[in-house]
Image (tube, rainbow, N blue to C red; front, side, top):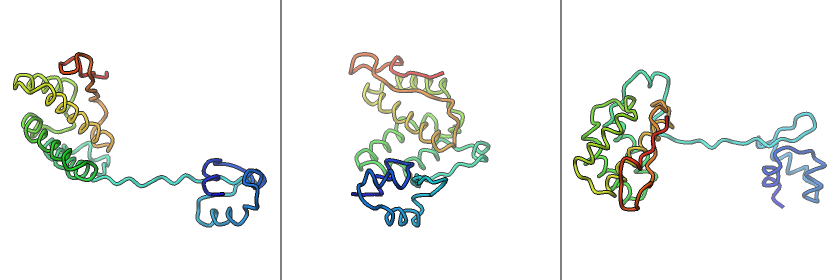
Length: 184
């Protein structure tokens, strides 16, 4: 029996409890887990310690990042290099790069990413409609913009004030402002 897996599942237990479940003497395995720092022994109970996996990000946000203005174009370059290149297939990466280059960056180019809000998104959507983007390209453009915003919100670079989702609320091949849901 894999004692480490059982310990991880139980989280908190006594020596008698785990030996009863495992049906053999677990003392040496528990000592090994204690030495490795995976268990602690407190008040007669063994407790499993959850190790948080280290996440790597290309941008580390500090409080001063809220004061500095990250230009949209620089944010896209960082997103492409630190996220899309590492976590997406080559074809997806190329599509992202194309959508950003042709549809999104020309509109937002030097705007600080921290200044984007729901009104900005609505104006961008209307600009895309005037440019007569195809339904699928428009949907993909809005979804990618949302992904970029969520990426920087999760990094703590920008505040979570601009929340929108791109959903299908009309016919499958039709895309309209009704398919963008803004959270207030």
